[in-house]
Structure formats: structure tokens, C-alpha cells
Image 1: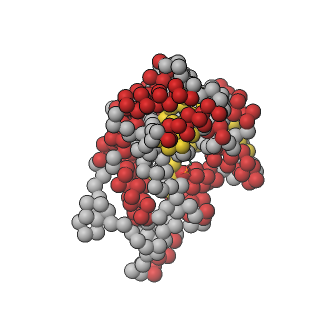
Image 2: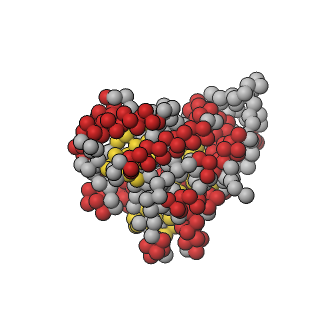
Image 3: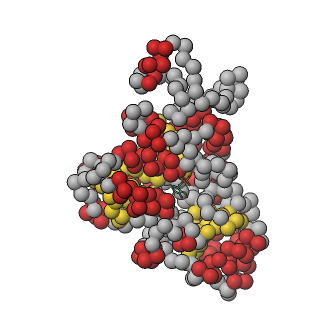
Amino acid sequence: MAFKPADKIQDLQYFGEFGGVNPSISDSSTYTFLSAKTMFDTFEGNADGCYLYSRHTSPSNLYLGQALAAMEGTETANVAASGMGAITPALLQLCKAGDHIVASRTIYGGTYAFLKNFAPRLNIETSFVDITKLDQVEAAITENTKVLYCETVSNPLLEVADIEGLSKIAKKHNLQLLVDNTFSPLSLSPAKLGADVVLHSLTKFINGSSDTMGGVTCGTQEFIDSLRNVNDGANMLLGPAMDSFRAASILKNLRTLHIRIKQHSENALYLAEKFEADGLKTVYPGLKSHSGHELFTKMMNKEYGYGGMLTVDAGSIDKANELMELMQERNLGYLAVSLGFYKTLFSAPGSSTSSEIPEDEQKEMGLSDGLIRFSIGLDNDIERTYTMMRECMVKVGILK
Ligand SMILES: Cc1ncc(COP(=O)(O)O)c(C=O)c1O
């Protein structure tokens, strides 16, 4: 039967302390115990339902984690203060000195920088591969490999990963498959396709109002417990804890995610089809010309579409900058990094979010310097937006 992630979120019902329709926010960093014995048991990890200290968990954080686990179809989840605050502890929990990771070469610049520059300080090495070539992925695995890491839809090239294929490889070699699903919440459900751990930057579509950072790790109870373990849990000990007020506000925004994703997807598909027909080099997983289109279609939860992210090649960084400045001036969106806002956001990843990736490697993976990454907004009249964007493109000479 088809997985229905929005129904899973809809079906969660919480009552606030005074019967409120939203759960009460836990405005405490520490919690009392009615007996000293319960405090001891909780530190030993044996007292379900007792709170210890908010770096470990808080009621508000557990509500949000539970909703996100329901959305991804995993046993449970742990929220963190940012996407990186979820990603790096998950990797460090699974890898120790001497271990090896196989990662997609087209991933968010911060994750790439962590794996390339920081993890080697701890003697954890990474091989970067073309994730769309399963034979290359398998060939990069060594006897020390512990983790296979990718994004379902990659940042910024929008490559689509074959989660079922990667999961088969991971199982065969006894690896954990970690998938960052930030670009495709609701549309794709990696855990249902065999991923062991699903990560998100909540900062993006899931929160959707560009007012806070957040992250989540969705996985088995055993793995999430290990991240929170007081003796050796990476989230507990490195301390990227989310604040309860933020958890409460993200939970409220999560309630409208299905409506927003449908609108982002509808708008992005409309623009992508128009730009492509105009002759612009356009990348969008919903276009038949996209190399991952069939794969995405096979994996997707149909009603949410192909997501809100697309790229257009403006030919050069100068043209890209000129166009982005003009579009901002005309109130079509913001020249800003990040994604998932109600307004369109645009940036040139080669010189911003992927600038951690050296220029020659950018070239090799097809990240041209004129590439503009769009996170398409919730515009009510997308035809009007298209007409105005087209005018800007004509003005800067990208279109005739
Ligand atoms: C795909 C992806 N993963 C992770 C992150 C990191 O998340 P955060 O900025 O919330 O730490 C980002 C941020 O841009 C991202 O685009």
C-alpha cells in the first residue's frame, strides 16, 4: 500500500497542559524527580517518560521528533539545533578513527567540507563518488567502510539517488545508508525505500518560514537512543540541542507542509517547463529531460510533485549576478542562500553554498559558474511570475 506521510502527521493528536490544541511548550532546561531512585534510573537510561535535562530531550522536542518520525516512517527521531547539528553527530556516532565513508560528490557544501576537511582530523576518510553510478559506489567500498551517505535529491545539481539500489549495496556490505532528504520532504520517503537513517535540515521546507535553524535524525529507537546516550552519544555530548520554543514553532509549521510542498512543486514545474521551452538549460527532476526523472517518478509519493528546486544556467557568473540582482529589484524573490521560503530564493551555488568545493571539482561534477539555484516560492499567480522573470531574462540578454 502507498505510504501517506501527510496522513501520518495529520493523525497525531496532542493536547496542551490545559487542554490547548497545541501541546504546551516545556520552558525548562532541567526537570524534577519525585524520587532519587528515578533520577538514578533515568541516568542509566531506564526510566521511560522521565525527562532529565533539555540537552538530552525535552517534551517539546519529543513531540516534534515524533511527528517527523511519523512523516518519514521511522521508529523515532531526534531533533537538533541545525541540519549540520543532526548530520555531523550521526556520522560521528557511526564512525570511529580508521573508518571510511563513501559519499556522493554532489552534496551540500557544509557536509562536503565536514567530510573532506574535518573528519580526516579524526582519521575518518571519505571517498566521493558519482552516486548515480551504483558500480562506482560499490567499487569505492573498502573493508573499513561503515557508512554510505547521499542526498535523495542533491544540492545543488538535483541528481536523484537510487535509494533502493544503494540500500541493497549497503545491506550486502553491512553498511549504514544515511540519506539527507532536505530537498524532497513528503515527495520522497527514503526509509521506506531502504535507508537506515534519514536526515533533514528543518531550516528549509519543513519549517518553511526562514526564521529558524533546525535539524532531525530519523532512525531506529536503538540508533536514536545511542545518539542521546549520556556516556557516548554524539548528540548528547557535542550538544547541538534545539530550543523547546523553536521545536514548538516548527511543529506548527509542519502542519501545513503538505499544502506548501504541493504549491512549491506546481510552481516549480510550471517555470521549469517554460524556461526549458524558451531554450534555457534548465534542470528540474519533473522534466522528462532530467536524467533522474524516471527514477524520481518510480520512488515518489505522487501527490506532492517533484519539489520546489530547479536550476537554470545563465551562461556566466556575471550574467547570473546581473539577473539575480534585477529579479530582486523587481520583487520576484530574494538573492539569498537557503530554500523553502514562501518567496522565491535564488543564489549562484558555485560562489556560495558550494564554494567549499574546489573549482576544478565543481567543473568535473558539472557545476558551472553561471548556474542559478532557485527555490521556487508559493506565488499564487505563477504565470505572472513567469512573465516578469522572462522580462528580466530578456533585459540582461539571456533570452531574446
Ligand atoms: C541539503 C542540505 N543538507 C543540510 C544542510 C545544512 O543544514 P543547516 O543549514 O540547517 O545546518 C543544508 C543547508 O543548506 C542543505 O541544503
